[in-house]
Picture 1 (cartoon, rainbow, N blue to C red):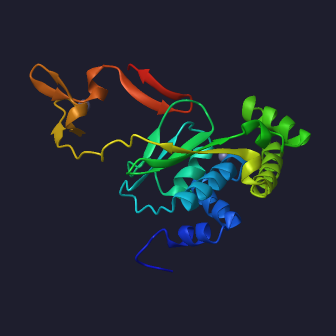
Picture 2 (picture 1 turned 135 degrees about the horizontal axis):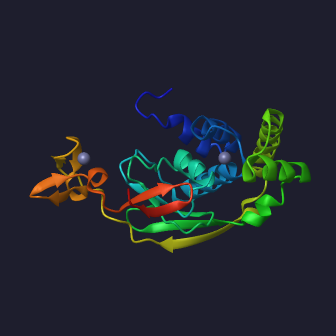
Picture 3 (picture 1 turned 120 degrees about the vertical axis):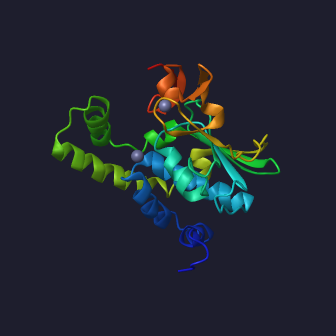
Length: 229
Ligand SMILES: [Zn+2]
Ligand SMILES: [Zn+2]
């Protein structure tokens, strides 16, 4: 293994067009094998190859995801644009689509024909999906069986042609500036350090959002919302 590049194995698999290997590795991040993580892997590999980009996690390439479902983990893993390295931009559109862009703004948007992906679901898988995921009323055997079916479906989906499942467009993107580095201040209530622009002032002292009882943004399963304590 190349010690200089921690993403060498991923890049080799992208270059070789080895989607099976990418999906297997993505399981380490995602925790299970499922259709939408598979389609994320497939879309990301296509965009990376087509744009000819490499990510070292320094924002030289950015991914804009339009959903926070399983799809997004395939995108993060294969493109190397992640929540933590500031190269992942999240637009709360609820669409299974993403754009990969260079800093120059040259980009590719891939939107997934989600109904085509769902067509691959067998009646048994659909029934179990309702029971286990939607109603959260599955037992251990149901969970196990759904996992098996999902895994089969995930690897099968990789075999579909890109044209069947994707709409691919060249786009020009307004790429945000590099993430700024902010100084920290200390919250006068809890004593924790907080990034300066997130701190508020109370009685002439810094106070963090958690201690201030003010509204803040939260990204959760339902998307971005404002929360007040
Ligand atoms: Zn999943
Ligand atoms: Zn505080």
